[in-house]
Image 1 (cartoon, rainbow, N blue to C red):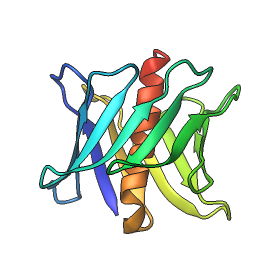
Image 2 (image 1 turned 60 degrees about the horizontal axis):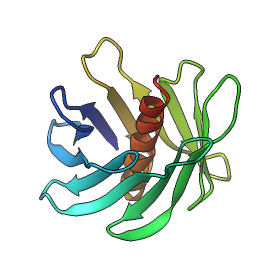
Image 3 (image 1 turned 180 degrees about the vertical axis):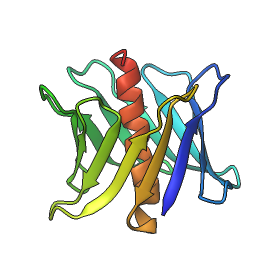
Image 4 (image 1 turned 135 degrees about the vertical axis):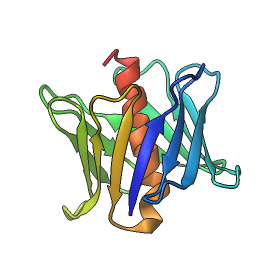
Amino acid sequence: MRLLFKQRFLSWFDSFDIYDEEGNTVFTVEGRLAWGHKLEIMNAAGEHIGTVQEEVLTFLPRFALYVGDEYVGEIKKEFTFFKPSFTLNCNDWQVEGDWLEWDYQVTDPDGNLVMTAQKELLRWTDTYTLDIAQPEDTLLCLMIVLAIDAAKCSSGN
């Protein structure tokens, strides 16, 4: 499954539209006023289906993940020197980025590819292409990309 993840150009808080390959809006993401980033995910019908909430006062970026209102785990940035790395504690996926922090791969504990995310260059706003292996992983993969983008924003990248 391929999704296009695009930040809105004129928005007070972080807000994104997520499209499928045919250009249909599949999800919208709205930033909310909170300590740290708080991103609420809505499906195409406008129903709230998930939240990515930054945990403040941590050494490295950490984000709580909610499906609906139920806590499912967290994604946290690991300390590395050259390539960004994140760990997802709800299913032990590993997230590895390239040294420019533009492209990311998500793998399961057995090393199988779950998702790739590539940042598109020469765009006015942050735009990513997501290739997701299993459709049932779509929401969690979207949360990962939102957390990475928010972590980069918090660190000034």
